[in-house]
Image 1 (tube, rainbow, N blue to C red):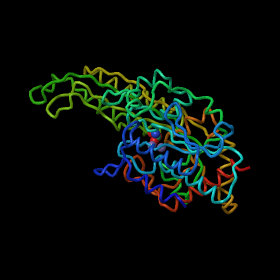
Image 2 (image 1 turned 90 degrees about the vertical axis):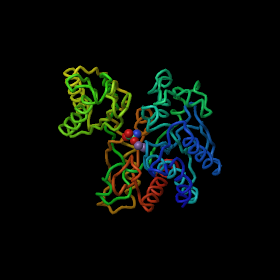
Image 3 (image 1 turned 30 degrees about the vertical axis):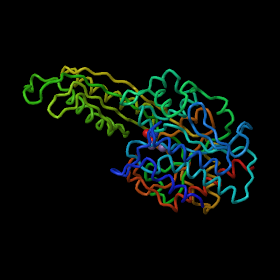
Image 4 (image 1 turned 180 degrees about the horizontal axis):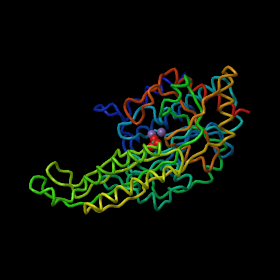
Length: 407
Ligand code: HGY
Ligand code: MN
Ligand code: MN
Protein backbone atom coordinates (compact mmCIF):
# COMPACT_ATOMS: atom_id res chain seq x y z
CA UNK A 1 0.00 0.00 0.00
CA UNK A 2 1.64 3.23 -1.20
CA UNK A 3 -0.36 5.38 1.21
CA UNK A 4 2.23 5.37 3.98
CA UNK A 5 5.16 6.54 1.82
CA UNK A 6 3.18 9.30 0.12
CA UNK A 7 1.87 10.46 3.47
CA UNK A 8 5.38 10.59 4.93
CA UNK A 9 6.64 12.61 1.94
CA UNK A 10 3.85 15.19 2.15
CA UNK A 11 3.76 15.51 5.92
CA UNK A 12 6.64 18.00 6.45
CA UNK A 13 5.55 20.42 3.68
CA UNK A 14 4.22 23.70 5.07
CA UNK A 15 4.25 22.52 8.66
CA UNK A 16 5.07 25.15 11.31
CA UNK A 17 7.77 24.01 13.74
CA UNK A 18 6.27 26.42 16.29
CA UNK A 19 2.68 25.15 16.28
CA UNK A 20 2.92 21.79 14.50
CA UNK A 21 0.07 23.08 12.36
CA UNK A 22 0.06 23.67 8.61
CA UNK A 23 0.37 26.98 6.80
CA UNK A 24 -0.19 25.91 3.20
CA UNK A 25 -1.79 29.06 1.85
CA UNK A 26 -2.73 29.63 -1.76
CA UNK A 27 0.11 30.60 -4.11
CA UNK A 28 2.76 30.63 -1.40
CA UNK A 29 6.03 28.65 -1.31
CA UNK A 30 4.40 25.90 0.76
CA UNK A 31 1.61 25.68 -1.83
CA UNK A 32 4.20 25.44 -4.58
CA UNK A 33 5.90 22.56 -2.75
CA UNK A 34 2.56 20.76 -2.41
CA UNK A 35 1.92 21.27 -6.10
CA UNK A 36 5.36 19.92 -6.96
CA UNK A 37 4.60 16.86 -4.84
CA UNK A 38 1.30 16.35 -6.72
CA UNK A 39 3.02 16.68 -10.10
CA UNK A 40 5.66 14.13 -9.07
CA UNK A 41 2.99 11.65 -7.95
CA UNK A 42 1.24 12.02 -11.29
CA UNK A 43 4.29 11.76 -13.53
CA UNK A 44 5.89 8.94 -11.52
CA UNK A 45 2.74 6.88 -12.23
CA UNK A 46 2.74 7.70 -15.93
CA UNK A 47 -0.51 9.66 -15.53
CA UNK A 48 -1.30 12.55 -17.87
CA UNK A 49 -0.55 15.64 -15.79
CA UNK A 50 -2.45 18.90 -16.41
CA UNK A 51 -2.84 22.27 -14.74
CA UNK A 52 -6.14 23.87 -15.74
CA UNK A 53 -6.89 27.53 -16.39
CA UNK A 54 -7.53 28.12 -12.68
CA UNK A 55 -4.40 26.39 -11.42
CA UNK A 56 -6.14 23.19 -10.34
CA UNK A 57 -3.97 20.11 -10.91
CA UNK A 58 -5.22 16.95 -12.65
CA UNK A 59 -3.63 13.52 -13.05
CA UNK A 60 -5.38 11.34 -15.67
CA UNK A 61 -5.42 7.59 -16.22
CA UNK A 62 -6.85 7.30 -19.71
CA UNK A 63 -7.89 9.94 -22.23
CA UNK A 64 -8.77 13.21 -20.45
CA UNK A 65 -11.04 14.18 -23.37
CA UNK A 66 -12.99 10.91 -23.63
CA UNK A 67 -15.78 12.02 -21.28
CA UNK A 68 -17.78 10.29 -18.52
CA UNK A 69 -14.65 10.38 -16.36
CA UNK A 70 -14.61 9.26 -12.74
CA UNK A 71 -12.70 11.91 -10.84
CA UNK A 72 -11.52 11.80 -7.25
CA UNK A 73 -9.31 14.10 -5.20
CA UNK A 74 -9.57 17.06 -2.82
CA UNK A 75 -7.29 19.98 -1.82
CA UNK A 76 -3.79 20.42 -0.37
CA UNK A 77 -4.06 23.89 1.11
CA UNK A 78 -4.85 24.46 4.80
CA UNK A 79 -6.36 26.86 7.27
CA UNK A 80 -3.82 28.69 9.47
CA UNK A 81 -2.25 26.03 11.72
CA UNK A 82 -4.60 23.43 10.31
CA UNK A 83 -4.24 19.70 10.63
CA UNK A 84 -2.47 17.23 8.35
CA UNK A 85 -5.57 15.41 7.11
CA UNK A 86 -8.10 18.05 5.99
CA UNK A 87 -7.63 17.91 2.22
CA UNK A 88 -4.37 15.96 1.85
CA UNK A 89 -6.00 12.74 3.06
CA UNK A 90 -8.27 12.89 0.02
CA UNK A 91 -5.46 13.55 -2.45
CA UNK A 92 -3.05 10.95 -1.06
CA UNK A 93 -5.86 8.39 -0.79
CA UNK A 94 -6.79 9.05 -4.42
CA UNK A 95 -3.33 8.20 -5.72
CA UNK A 96 -3.17 5.20 -3.39
CA UNK A 97 -6.59 4.02 -4.60
CA UNK A 98 -5.35 4.24 -8.21
CA UNK A 99 -2.34 2.14 -7.21
CA UNK A 100 -4.71 -0.36 -5.58
CA UNK A 101 -6.83 -0.53 -8.74
CA UNK A 102 -3.72 -1.27 -10.78
CA UNK A 103 -2.51 -3.90 -8.30
CA UNK A 104 -5.90 -5.62 -8.62
CA UNK A 105 -5.47 -5.69 -12.38
CA UNK A 106 -8.67 -3.66 -12.72
CA UNK A 107 -9.17 -2.19 -16.19
CA UNK A 108 -11.09 1.08 -16.16
CA UNK A 109 -13.35 1.54 -19.20
CA UNK A 110 -13.63 5.25 -18.40
CA UNK A 111 -10.97 7.86 -17.73
CA UNK A 112 -10.07 8.16 -14.04
CA UNK A 113 -8.46 11.29 -12.63
CA UNK A 114 -7.05 12.66 -9.39
CA UNK A 115 -7.55 16.39 -8.84
CA UNK A 116 -6.06 18.93 -6.44
CA UNK A 117 -8.38 21.94 -6.25
CA UNK A 118 -6.50 25.13 -5.37
CA UNK A 119 -7.32 27.40 -2.44
CA UNK A 120 -10.18 25.41 -0.91
CA UNK A 121 -9.81 26.91 2.56
CA UNK A 122 -9.70 30.54 1.49
CA UNK A 123 -7.19 31.17 4.30
CA UNK A 124 -5.31 33.88 2.37
CA UNK A 125 -7.99 35.63 0.31
CA UNK A 126 -11.06 34.98 2.49
CA UNK A 127 -13.20 33.08 -0.03
CA UNK A 128 -13.61 29.30 0.26
CA UNK A 129 -13.11 26.98 -2.73
CA UNK A 130 -11.66 29.51 -5.18
CA UNK A 131 -10.25 26.89 -7.58
CA UNK A 132 -13.46 24.88 -7.84
CA UNK A 133 -15.73 27.95 -7.78
CA UNK A 134 -13.87 29.51 -10.71
CA UNK A 135 -14.04 26.24 -12.67
CA UNK A 136 -17.74 25.82 -11.92
CA UNK A 137 -18.47 29.43 -12.86
CA UNK A 138 -19.55 30.31 -9.30
CA UNK A 139 -16.94 33.06 -9.02
CA UNK A 140 -16.54 35.62 -11.78
CA UNK A 141 -13.15 36.66 -13.09
CA UNK A 142 -13.82 40.21 -11.85
CA UNK A 143 -14.65 38.94 -8.34
CA UNK A 144 -11.53 36.78 -8.36
CA UNK A 145 -9.33 39.66 -9.47
CA UNK A 146 -10.60 41.72 -6.55
CA UNK A 147 -9.64 39.13 -3.92
CA UNK A 148 -6.92 40.63 -1.73
CA UNK A 149 -4.93 39.17 1.16
CA UNK A 150 -4.07 40.85 4.47
CA UNK A 151 -0.92 42.41 2.95
CA UNK A 152 -2.85 43.96 0.08
CA UNK A 153 -1.65 41.41 -2.50
CA UNK A 154 -4.37 40.56 -5.01
CA UNK A 155 -5.08 37.05 -6.25
CA UNK A 156 -3.72 37.84 -9.74
CA UNK A 157 -0.52 39.24 -8.24
CA UNK A 158 -0.11 36.15 -6.06
CA UNK A 159 -0.74 33.79 -8.98
CA UNK A 160 1.74 35.69 -11.15
CA UNK A 161 4.37 35.61 -8.40
CA UNK A 162 3.85 31.85 -8.23
CA UNK A 163 4.43 31.55 -11.99
CA UNK A 164 0.78 31.22 -13.11
CA UNK A 165 -0.96 33.44 -15.64
CA UNK A 166 -3.98 35.03 -13.92
CA UNK A 167 -5.37 36.08 -17.30
CA UNK A 168 -6.45 32.49 -18.02
CA UNK A 169 -8.78 32.11 -15.01
CA UNK A 170 -12.48 31.59 -15.60
CA UNK A 171 -15.25 29.01 -15.95
CA UNK A 172 -14.28 25.67 -17.50
CA UNK A 173 -17.58 24.03 -18.55
CA UNK A 174 -15.85 21.82 -21.14
CA UNK A 175 -13.68 20.26 -18.44
CA UNK A 176 -16.63 19.66 -16.11
CA UNK A 177 -18.70 18.24 -19.00
CA UNK A 178 -16.14 15.43 -19.28
CA UNK A 179 -16.78 14.31 -15.70
CA UNK A 180 -19.38 11.61 -15.12
CA UNK A 181 -18.87 11.46 -11.34
CA UNK A 182 -16.73 13.23 -8.74
CA UNK A 183 -16.04 11.43 -5.45
CA UNK A 184 -14.10 13.27 -2.73
CA UNK A 185 -12.65 11.36 0.22
CA UNK A 186 -12.17 13.54 3.29
CA UNK A 187 -11.35 13.10 6.94
CA UNK A 188 -14.55 13.47 8.92
CA UNK A 189 -14.66 16.80 10.76
CA UNK A 190 -16.76 15.49 13.59
CA UNK A 191 -17.21 12.28 15.59
CA UNK A 192 -20.18 10.58 13.94
CA UNK A 193 -18.09 7.66 12.63
CA UNK A 194 -16.31 7.32 15.95
CA UNK A 195 -19.74 6.92 17.53
CA UNK A 196 -20.95 4.36 14.98
CA UNK A 197 -17.69 2.41 15.11
CA UNK A 198 -17.19 2.59 11.33
CA UNK A 199 -13.94 3.56 9.62
CA UNK A 200 -15.66 4.92 6.51
CA UNK A 201 -19.00 6.59 5.82
CA UNK A 202 -20.85 8.27 2.95
CA UNK A 203 -21.91 11.93 2.90
CA UNK A 204 -25.52 12.94 2.51
CA UNK A 205 -25.38 16.75 2.60
CA UNK A 206 -23.49 19.91 3.54
CA UNK A 207 -25.08 22.60 5.70
CA UNK A 208 -25.50 26.05 4.15
CA UNK A 209 -22.71 28.25 5.48
CA UNK A 210 -21.03 31.58 4.96
CA UNK A 211 -18.51 34.17 6.12
CA UNK A 212 -19.44 37.79 7.01
CA UNK A 213 -17.01 40.61 7.79
CA UNK A 214 -18.11 43.08 10.53
CA UNK A 215 -16.23 46.42 10.44
CA UNK A 216 -16.70 48.39 13.69
CA UNK A 217 -15.41 51.98 13.37
CA UNK A 218 -14.74 54.07 16.48
CA UNK A 219 -12.34 56.79 17.49
CA UNK A 220 -8.65 56.21 18.14
CA UNK A 221 -7.51 57.74 21.41
CA UNK A 222 -5.16 57.38 24.36
CA UNK A 223 -5.90 54.34 26.53
CA UNK A 224 -4.60 56.09 29.63
CA UNK A 225 -5.98 59.58 29.44
CA UNK A 226 -9.35 59.25 27.73
CA UNK A 227 -12.28 59.18 30.18
CA UNK A 228 -14.60 56.19 29.69
CA UNK A 229 -17.51 58.54 29.00
CA UNK A 230 -15.55 60.20 26.19
CA UNK A 231 -14.67 57.01 24.34
CA UNK A 232 -16.03 55.53 21.11
CA UNK A 233 -14.40 52.14 21.48
CA UNK A 234 -15.34 49.70 18.67
CA UNK A 235 -13.95 46.78 20.67
CA UNK A 236 -16.99 46.94 22.95
CA UNK A 237 -19.42 46.59 20.05
CA UNK A 238 -17.32 43.75 18.69
CA UNK A 239 -17.36 42.00 22.08
CA UNK A 240 -21.14 42.38 22.36
CA UNK A 241 -21.52 40.94 18.85
CA UNK A 242 -19.41 37.89 19.67
CA UNK A 243 -21.64 37.14 22.67
CA UNK A 244 -24.75 37.77 20.58
CA UNK A 245 -23.44 35.26 18.00
CA UNK A 246 -23.23 32.56 20.65
CA UNK A 247 -26.76 33.37 21.93
CA UNK A 248 -28.28 33.32 18.42
CA UNK A 249 -26.54 30.07 17.46
CA UNK A 250 -27.60 28.32 20.68
CA UNK A 251 -31.17 29.46 20.18
CA UNK A 252 -31.27 28.11 16.59
CA UNK A 253 -29.24 24.93 17.25
CA UNK A 254 -26.74 26.28 14.69
CA UNK A 255 -23.09 27.36 14.90
CA UNK A 256 -21.49 30.81 14.77
CA UNK A 257 -17.83 31.64 15.23
CA UNK A 258 -15.77 34.80 15.29
CA UNK A 259 -12.37 33.19 14.73
CA UNK A 260 -10.50 36.00 13.00
CA UNK A 261 -10.10 39.64 14.06
CA UNK A 262 -7.95 42.55 13.00
CA UNK A 263 -7.57 45.74 15.02
CA UNK A 264 -6.24 49.13 13.93
CA UNK A 265 -3.89 50.51 15.09
CA UNK A 266 -3.56 47.38 17.28
CA UNK A 267 -1.61 49.08 20.07
CA UNK A 268 -1.82 48.01 23.70
CA UNK A 269 -2.19 51.62 24.87
CA UNK A 270 -4.43 52.86 22.08
CA UNK A 271 -8.22 52.72 21.86
CA UNK A 272 -8.85 51.18 18.43
CA UNK A 273 -10.14 53.18 15.50
CA UNK A 274 -11.29 50.02 13.72
CA UNK A 275 -12.10 46.48 14.80
CA UNK A 276 -12.73 44.02 11.97
CA UNK A 277 -14.25 40.65 12.91
CA UNK A 278 -15.08 37.73 10.62
CA UNK A 279 -18.16 35.62 11.38
CA UNK A 280 -18.45 32.02 10.17
CA UNK A 281 -21.99 30.72 10.60
CA UNK A 282 -23.68 27.48 9.54
CA UNK A 283 -27.02 25.81 10.12
CA UNK A 284 -28.94 22.71 9.03
CA UNK A 285 -31.15 24.79 6.72
CA UNK A 286 -31.17 28.20 5.07
CA UNK A 287 -34.01 29.62 7.14
CA UNK A 288 -32.19 28.88 10.37
CA UNK A 289 -28.94 30.33 9.01
CA UNK A 290 -30.71 33.51 7.93
CA UNK A 291 -32.31 33.85 11.37
CA UNK A 292 -28.97 33.47 13.13
CA UNK A 293 -27.07 35.93 10.96
CA UNK A 294 -29.92 38.42 11.01
CA UNK A 295 -30.08 38.22 14.81
CA UNK A 296 -26.32 38.75 15.12
CA UNK A 297 -26.32 41.72 12.78
CA UNK A 298 -29.32 43.25 14.59
CA UNK A 299 -27.54 43.00 17.96
CA UNK A 300 -24.36 44.44 16.44
CA UNK A 301 -26.20 47.40 14.95
CA UNK A 302 -28.11 48.10 18.18
CA UNK A 303 -24.95 48.23 20.26
CA UNK A 304 -23.00 50.20 17.65
CA UNK A 305 -25.71 52.83 17.30
CA UNK A 306 -26.08 53.19 21.06
CA UNK A 307 -22.35 53.84 21.39
CA UNK A 308 -21.65 55.99 18.34
CA UNK A 309 -19.82 53.24 16.48
CA UNK A 310 -19.97 52.88 12.71
CA UNK A 311 -20.72 49.41 11.37
CA UNK A 312 -20.45 47.80 7.93
CA UNK A 313 -21.33 44.13 7.40
CA UNK A 314 -20.11 42.43 4.21
CA UNK A 315 -20.86 38.83 3.18
CA UNK A 316 -17.52 37.55 1.86
CA UNK A 317 -18.28 33.88 1.18
CA UNK A 318 -21.43 31.79 0.95
CA UNK A 319 -22.29 28.20 0.05
CA UNK A 320 -25.93 27.10 -0.11
CA UNK A 321 -27.10 23.77 1.24
CA UNK A 322 -25.69 20.82 -0.71
CA UNK A 323 -27.67 17.59 -1.17
CA UNK A 324 -25.32 15.08 -2.78
CA UNK A 325 -26.50 13.13 -5.82
CA UNK A 326 -28.85 10.48 -4.40
CA UNK A 327 -28.08 7.79 -6.98
CA UNK A 328 -24.33 8.20 -6.51
CA UNK A 329 -24.69 8.35 -2.74
CA UNK A 330 -26.71 5.13 -2.75
CA UNK A 331 -24.24 3.45 -5.15
CA UNK A 332 -21.36 4.28 -2.80
CA UNK A 333 -23.35 2.95 0.16
CA UNK A 334 -24.10 -0.25 -1.81
CA UNK A 335 -20.44 -0.72 -2.71
CA UNK A 336 -19.25 -0.06 0.85
CA UNK A 337 -22.04 -2.25 2.21
CA UNK A 338 -20.94 -5.31 0.23
CA UNK A 339 -18.46 -6.33 2.91
CA UNK A 340 -20.84 -5.70 5.78
CA UNK A 341 -23.28 -7.98 7.49
CA UNK A 342 -26.74 -7.39 5.92
CA UNK A 343 -28.10 -5.82 9.06
CA UNK A 344 -25.24 -3.33 9.38
CA UNK A 345 -25.93 -0.20 7.36
CA UNK A 346 -23.17 1.99 5.95
CA UNK A 347 -23.24 5.31 7.84
CA UNK A 348 -24.63 8.12 5.69
CA UNK A 349 -23.96 11.45 7.39
CA UNK A 350 -24.38 15.18 6.89
CA UNK A 351 -21.68 17.69 7.64
CA UNK A 352 -21.25 21.36 8.49
CA UNK A 353 -17.93 21.47 6.67
CA UNK A 354 -17.66 22.87 3.16
CA UNK A 355 -15.86 21.02 0.37
CA UNK A 356 -15.00 21.33 -3.30
CA UNK A 357 -17.44 18.46 -3.80
CA UNK A 358 -20.13 20.83 -2.56
CA UNK A 359 -19.20 23.40 -5.16
CA UNK A 360 -19.15 20.85 -8.00
CA UNK A 361 -22.41 19.21 -6.90
CA UNK A 362 -24.40 21.81 -8.83
CA UNK A 363 -22.77 20.78 -12.11
CA UNK A 364 -21.51 17.19 -11.79
CA UNK A 365 -22.92 14.10 -9.99
CA UNK A 366 -20.92 14.29 -6.76
CA UNK A 367 -20.46 12.21 -3.61
CA UNK A 368 -18.14 12.09 -0.62
CA UNK A 369 -16.56 9.44 1.55
CA UNK A 370 -15.61 10.28 5.13
CA UNK A 371 -12.81 8.58 7.06
CA UNK A 372 -13.12 8.29 10.84
CA UNK A 373 -11.61 11.06 12.94
CA UNK A 374 -11.36 9.60 16.46
CA UNK A 375 -11.60 12.96 18.24
CA UNK A 376 -13.57 14.88 15.62
CA UNK A 377 -11.05 17.72 15.99
CA UNK A 378 -10.22 19.54 12.73
CA UNK A 379 -8.78 22.89 11.62
CA UNK A 380 -6.23 22.28 14.36
CA UNK A 381 -2.77 20.65 14.65
CA UNK A 382 -4.51 18.05 16.84
CA UNK A 383 -6.52 16.71 13.87
CA UNK A 384 -5.89 12.97 13.57
CA UNK A 385 -6.90 9.72 11.92
CA UNK A 386 -5.57 6.21 12.54
CA UNK A 387 -3.47 4.80 9.68
CA UNK A 388 -5.63 1.66 9.64
CA UNK A 389 -8.68 3.85 9.05
CA UNK A 390 -6.83 5.77 6.32
CA UNK A 391 -6.00 2.46 4.62
CA UNK A 392 -9.65 1.40 5.00
CA UNK A 393 -10.55 4.65 3.26
CA UNK A 394 -8.16 3.91 0.40
CA UNK A 395 -9.60 0.43 -0.07
CA UNK A 396 -13.15 1.82 0.05
CA UNK A 397 -12.24 4.47 -2.53
CA UNK A 398 -10.61 1.82 -4.72
CA UNK A 399 -13.82 -0.24 -4.49
CA UNK A 400 -15.82 2.83 -5.47
CA UNK A 401 -13.53 3.70 -8.40
CA UNK A 402 -13.62 0.08 -9.57
CA UNK A 403 -17.40 0.03 -9.25
CA UNK A 404 -17.84 3.31 -11.15
CA UNK A 405 -15.07 3.13 -13.75
CA UNK A 406 -14.51 -0.54 -14.50
CA UNK A 407 -17.97 -1.64 -15.47
O1 HGY B 1 -14.69 25.87 6.16
C1 HGY B 1 -14.90 24.73 5.77
O2 HGY B 1 -15.90 24.12 6.11
C2 HGY B 1 -13.91 24.04 4.88
O3 HGY B 1 -12.93 23.48 5.69
N1 HGY B 1 -13.35 24.93 3.92
MN1 MN C 1 -11.04 22.65 6.02
MN1 MN D 1 -11.22 20.23 3.46
